[in-house]
Amino acid sequence: MPRIEPLVPPYSPAVDQDLRRWMPPGVPHEPLLLFRVLHRSPELASRMFALGAGLLGHGLLPAADRELVIARVTARSGCAYEWGVHAATLAPRAGLGPELLRATATTDPTPVVSERQAALLAAVDELHDTARLSESAWTALRGHYEDEQLLELLVLAGWYRTISYLANGLLLEEETWAAPFPGS
Image: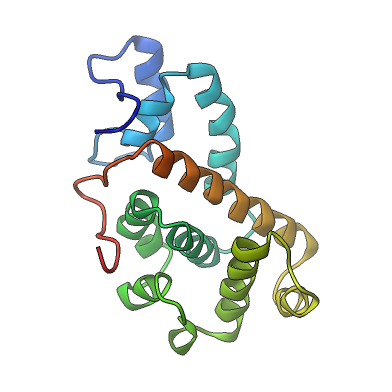
């Protein structure tokens, strides 16, 4: 059981509208457990929605790169909850296959990734371990991305580290439909 009880239906009209807005159109699942817990604080949820939705729906990074970064950040953070949600939904739509997704949860995913993907994964690993990027990591990224994309990449990695803290700190159980975290 999560440390903070999620909202359960019936929702107030305002919460129902907000939760529907947080879920992609046509998704057959109930609103995510994370979203239902966050809506215990509607003001905080509203502030978080703007950044989260902006990164997912209006970002400058290619969707596959975005989902690779999210998978690696959440895997390195031990966040089976968020890793599983993205691995089951957004990552496959972005073109990430099961082998690559599993590789994000290993210590050395480089045998199954391209040079660009390797640069992304190395950057995520450095950020996770040191909260910095070495000159070599930065140079590797610069070979593939413009300034605006690099700024977004740093925000994206930090955002999903925050989401991982939130899900792990709340002890959120994996969604029943989520992809199982490798090794769990």
